[in-house]
Amino acid sequence: MSLERTPVLVVGGGIGGMACALALARQGQPVALLERSAHLGEIGAGLQLGPNAFAALDALGVGDQVRCAAVFTERLVMMDAVDCREVASVPVGEAFRARFGNPYAVSHRADLHGALHAAAAAHPLVRLHTGVRIAAVEVGAHGVSATAADGRRFHGAALVGCDGVKSVVREKLLGDAPRVSGHVVYRAVVPVADMPDDLRMNAPVVWAGPDCHLVHYPLRGGEQYNLVVTFHSREREEWGVTDGSKEEVLSYFQGVHPRPRQLLDRPTSWRRWSTADRDPVERWSEGRATLLGDAAHPMMQYLAQGACMALEDAVTLAAAVQARDFDFPAAFRLYQSARIARAARVVLSVREMGRLYHAKGVERLVRNSLWPDRSPTRFHDALEWLYAWRPDNCLADAAVGRGGEIPSPTTATILND
Ligand SMILES: Cc1cc2nc3c(=O)[nH]c(=O)nc-3n(C[C@H](O)[C@H](O)[C@H](O)COP(=O)(O)OP(=O)(O)OC[C@H]3O[C@@H](n4cnc5c(N)ncnc54)[C@H](O)[C@@H]3O)c2cc1C
Image (tube, rainbow, N blue to C red; front, side, top):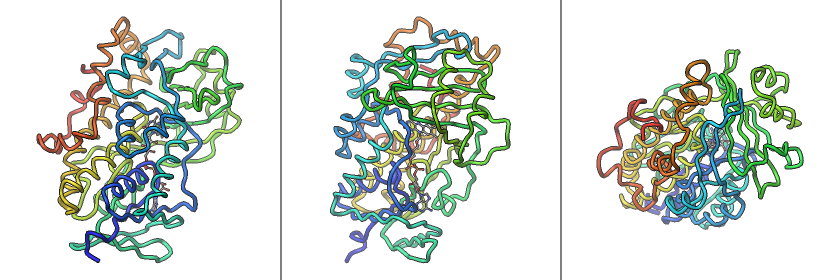
């Protein structure tokens, strides 16, 4: 068998890994996906998906399945959580969909991951291996290998690390450390019957408070609602997921208006995520190995784009492999030069957005004065760079040489329209 026909090893079977496996297989490349969990799946929570995610999902052949189970939202809303005033409302109805060619929608994570998983599992070129925790990787001139914690070894023509924020592959390729944000997230999904009547809105609604915020949006035809609350922790945090406590959540939302605060009584169980991102870097690849999704560019959730970016990465990676005729080191260089500046712009914009979400004192007043009376077209123009991404020109940034430059935070902000 020639080297080109040996599989690519995809480490991690989350949204990024599953999309990567599917994208490569659809180009004719065999894939072995190695996932540490015994079962492939996603956590019970929602996801917002911008039009760029749907463009990527169409390129992966699963756009219609995801659209069927998603709720198309009418607006994106930000409210002041202290005085209940509307701060911004971005219409994402018909005109938005016509402009960007796709909806802004919300999906259950399991529905998105399930569509990718089903398509990958059905593809003859994809082999899914569960219960494989990769502990070490080796990248050679002619091939790669990945060794599991139980000693099993897998060989491939190339390797893509899709193993999330604490990526083992990244540790091998770059060796840098995640930046623990100190921002803690609690998430829950509740049945519609438990959702207060006055908060049943067909929109992702952000209640922006001092050092905290709450988000809610409908899922699965409005049968369920996704609740997310975030606060700046008083503790010294480490990245990771633990069981949470309602008492802890309540202690951070004392100054918040009763209307959003009533949400905190609804869930019967909460999980607690201590979040992290990483400073953008100018290289994700080394020879026959590269990174994708949170392993490449973990970001906080304030623009709801982490999974969207992983989907874009997967489509771009496969396009680069095709464009470089399965020469993996060349393809990975092309992929990273097409992706790095864009992903970095999102990571840096997210940090700015988090500052606005959690503004207090004068910063809060500034935030609340930014957007009243802004026209839908101005909002849409400001979002063009993010949502107008297309699979058919996904390698364009590499071609014009924008790929390697990391933009400064000031030019990166989403507010500079
Ligand atoms: C609160 C919150 C809300 C969010 N909301 C949104 C949103 O609305 N929209 C959006 O687009 N994004 C959102 N995101 C971001 C999004 O969830 C992530 O960016 C996305 O899930 C990353 O997918 P991934 O496949 O790269 O990584 P992961 O989902 O972390 O998957 C990594 C996979 O690799 C496996 N793995 C890890 N280590 C190993 C190993 N050593 N060997 C084998 N397997 C391994 C893991 O088990 C896992 O299956 C949100 C994130 C948070 C925290």
